[in-house]
Image (cartoon, rainbow, N blue to C red):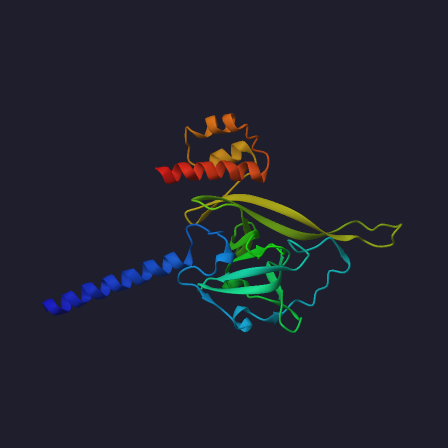
Amino acid sequence: MKIVLKFLRIFSMLVCSIIVNNNLHAQNLTIDISNPGQGPSAGMVRVTNVSAIGDKKAASLTYEDVEGTPFWDEHWNSAVLYFKSGAMYKLPKAKLNLYTSEVHYENENGSELVAETNLIDKIAFLDSKDATKILAVFAVLPDYIDNKPAGFYRVFNNGAYQLILLQKNLVKVSPFDPLLGKNITSFFKKTYYGIYNNGKTIPLKGLDKNSFLEAIPFNASIQPWIKNTKNKLKSEEDFIALLNYYNSLETAK
């Protein structure tokens, strides 16, 4: 009987351990935007089979009659795809479609394909002149605006509190223009800023001082730092600088 009870205790501990590990793997508490040029981190595997990232053809929808662009950058850039499985894949040519929330890439035959968004953890776009430098990092997180399972959020800094941006490129049709003899269809963007902390997204009402300070726990050192650095808290760079300082205070605790 004692042997049976001991076995059950060990089995219960193993089950709990598996559940905890799965939950940690499913939800990153922070999003690492470190330099991908250093290679895969511990536990990561480089994927060489392109079909593993999803190889469906890009939608037949064309944007020729739509002014503007659906992409974060309409030019092709090299990128590193990080998967929820822990694997990674280097793409020589990639684009991020913020209209469909999909990563477009070119295969070895020059065909434009789309990766499976549900497999992606994040994507890091690299500088075309220096592949060791990052242009931007986008993480796949739940889209709280449209209540969808996935959206691409740009992540601006490392640390416990991270500034993130969900940008949506949408389509609008203007009233009929009699001079042109047609309606004008064009892309426009909507931006939603937030703070990512401990695996959760805290939406910001706007990119302004009051909204920002309401989203992070109070620290008496913040106001003096803002005054001494003459930080106007009006741009992304201003808020990134503030978060870097705030995160340093959290780390020092």
